Image 1: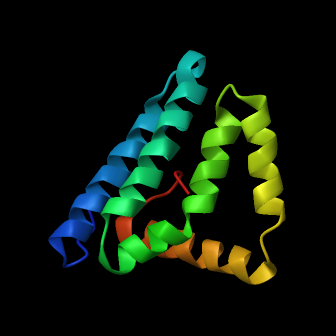
Image 2: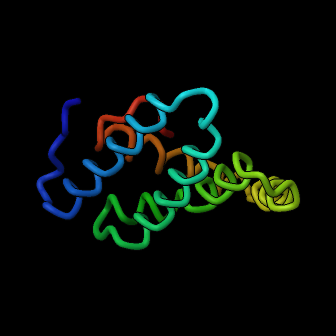
Length: 115
């Protein structure tokens, strides 16, 4: 997998971690796919808190999406319903910001399936 450098070692490390998460998701077997997805989105939420700079800001913008995906792929149906409600309450501007942040992270870190 090609690692696109961001010019910032912290961002490069975050991109490497995101690419590792993407590989884990792609390579997950069908029997464990939801568990891998749930853990991956939980880890991505944590990574957002740890990453600085523009990439960190983009990841923080994506946290509502990470939390929703974590809940939707987990076993807790109540959490999944609450996550759907939370995202449904986001404004058009907030959704546009999430979309822009996902595009930025995908382009910066050369991701294709994770976001």
